[in-house]
Image (cartoon, rainbow, N blue to C red; front, side):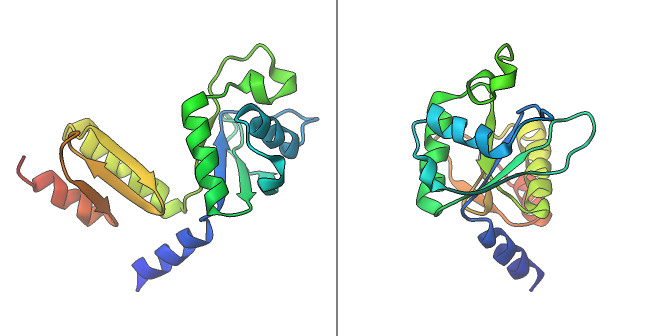
Length: 166
């Protein structure tokens, strides 16, 4: 039951993105940053529905949450960001000299963020899995290029993979 509720919460985030590593400026509007990102990755601005800055720890810039028109638009954005790797200077006018990469990912529930982090710590760092990622609402892992893709729904799934023979 709890897992189903988690899946429904994640499903609600199906057309949302999180943008990270963009410094917060007192005069900025998150909408302008997101529109600049859209132009940089050659995506139409009309795909953007809502943008807002989230709260963050004092030592990190706040992430920007973006609601897009639909999941197809979200997929296009993710594909373009992955291939073009935009920089902060490309999307934030007040930060022309900052050469950090802008990180864009699917928005995740807090539980999925924790699960992804746990999977990376255990599988990628300790078990030498080559890939651990999040896509379409699920954490996934793959030991090597020619191996099977595993879907991880809980910490128990991570534990099961750590005891699995190579």
